[in-house]
Each structure stands twice: as C-alpha cells, then as structure tokens.
Image (tube, rainbow, N blue to C red; front, side, top):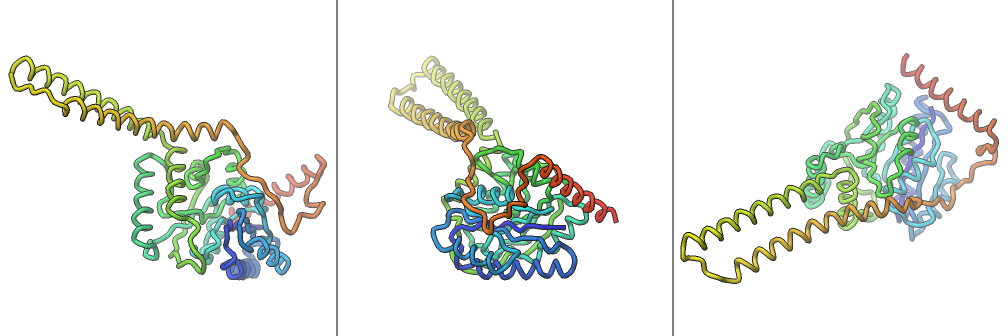
Length: 345
C-alpha cells in the first residue's frame, strides 16, 4: 500500500532538513516492516515562502527519491496549502502533518495500522496541552467550547495531523468552500474514523507561523462557515430588546398617569438610544461577517495555483488518452480491492 505524507511549509528553512530526515527514516522503517510500499512519498508544499524553503525542498528531492515538492504561486494560507497537497499527492492514503515536528511522527505507524484495520480517517489527538503557554491553552480550550456551543462538529484537541484514505480524499475534493476550515469539513464526510493519542513536543526550531491575528481569523472561518447560531442569537437578542423596551414604555406611562414622580431628564432618552444603537451595530457587524463569506463564495475564485511540482512527473505518469486514463482507474480499483482483502484477512 502506498502512502503520501503531506507537509505544508511557510518559511520553514530552519526545520526542513531535520523534518525530512525523520520522515524519510520513518518511511524506510515502514517499508522494511512491509507496512507500506517503496513508492511512498513525502510531499512538501511550499506556501509562497519568502526564505530558502523551496530551494531546500528541491535539494532534498534530488537526494532522496521519497521526497517531492509542490510550490504554490503565492502564499494562500495553511488550509489552502494543505488542501493543495492533499489534492495533488498520490497514494492509497495521505497523512497531513506540520513541518515544525511538534506532532509525534511515530504515531504515523499507529495511523497506518488503524487504516489497515478499516478506518478511512484517523485523527491524531493530543493527550494534554502542557507544552502550550497559558494564553495558548486558554484560547484553544475556549475555541473548542465555543465551537461546541455553536453546534460545529470538531474533534477536541485535534489540529491537522490525520490520515485519510483515498476514498475520503476524493470525497473531500467535492467540497468547494473558499473559506476553508478542514477540521469542520472532514468530520462531515461520514467515513469510519479512529483516534490515536500522542504528546505534543516543543517546536524544533523557528517561530510559530500562527500569530494571534491568524488564530482569530481561523476561528471566525470555523464559526461562520459551519454555524448559523450567531444569526439566531441576533433574533433572540432583538426580541429581548423589544420586550424590554415595551416593558419600559408601560412603566413610564404608569408613572406618568398614577404618580407625580416623573422627572424629565436626559437618561430616559439618551441611554436607551445608545443601548439600542449599540445592539444594532453589533447585529449589523455579525450579519456583515456572513455577507462577506457569501461574497467570497459567489466569486468562486480558485483557491490556489500550483506553480511547480519537483521533480516533475514523467510524461508516462500523465496519460492523455481515454484508454490510458481507464487503465489508471483500473489500477486504482485493483489497489482498493487488494486493500479490502488485507482488511478482511
């Protein structure tokens, strides 16, 4: 069985050499144990890096036949780079992992085992978050709680370290969202899943490529792409403000009619105006977030362009005739049938 390991990279020149070394050693171990085929590959996806990331990838690919590179035409963000790798890489199963070596690559062996036992999607799940800073830990846990309240199905303490079978990959390609949130999309596929648990390590070198601004944008994409709960909150809030205003009106009329305590003043006019105005602005802002997403989706712009694949595929790897394409399809079906026989045994 052939696997592909997809590694999105953005300015990762400090870790690439060590990352490639460890992943290549892992591939060799799995091949030696006859768990995967010799044709298995590591696919580094350069997400428009500004440093020497692509040059290093080219050098690594020349030295090791297991390594291939995919270069995007410009920076498109982690999720788009990951999708580009998953859509381009070859293999009966693909494993996605970040380049910083924080995820335990030895878990890939367990992932392959779970896949052979019938799981189409295997999630890498963190056991604990002790290596995170207090701020990162609090915000991450808060994110998962908010997503749960919003009704979004995500795997707790799972990032983008996972294995997906070819069937799951082909199903993922059917999703056409521009605002990608793969952690929410993949559970929607409905295939058989399994979890493997690991302890997350410190980053091997370099700085995190996910600052606070990107974390907030990522969270907003997750919420607005999968949940209409914020819109429903607006409806409830609007009804609450209306009911409160009606009760205040009744109270003001009662004071005016049944007592002489009504004192004209700015509070009864200015404060409700500011309150209602603030609520209106908040509601318009939330609606604007959804309109912005709709605007991006209706444009249907391409999510990425691949500038180069290195080493380039040979001409006989890209059949141009219907007959060759059918042969390729039959070969893929034969591999799937062989996979099913292994699982049945």
